Length: 125
Image 1 (spheres, rainbow, N blue to C red):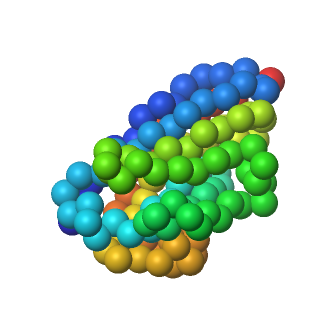
Image 2: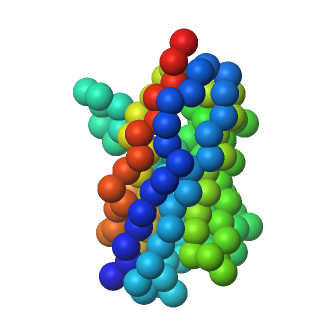
C-alpha cells in the first residue's frame, strides 16, 4: 500500500499563490503516476492535474491550465502542485491520489486506489 499526506493548504487572497505538497510512503515504488483532485462543497470531486513517473508527461484540467503546475521529486517521494493566479473558484479540499502501477491516463480518469486526507485551500475575493 501507499500512504499519502498532503500539506501546504491555507487562506490566500485572489491572485495569490500556494504550493501544495504530497508526501508518499509505503510501497512508493508502485506509485507510478500521481494526481491531484479537488472537491468543493456541494460538488463532486474533480480532476486537477496528473504526472507520470518521470515527470515528463503532465495533464491538467482546463480550469487550471496555465495557472497550476504539477511536479515531482522521486528522491523525496513527493509530488507538488504550484498554484498561481488563484481565484475564489479554486476554493476546495485538495487531495493527492495514486495507485499500484497506474498509467497517467488512468489517474486522469480518477481510477485511483489511494487517497490522502486532503488539505483545505481557501481563496478570498
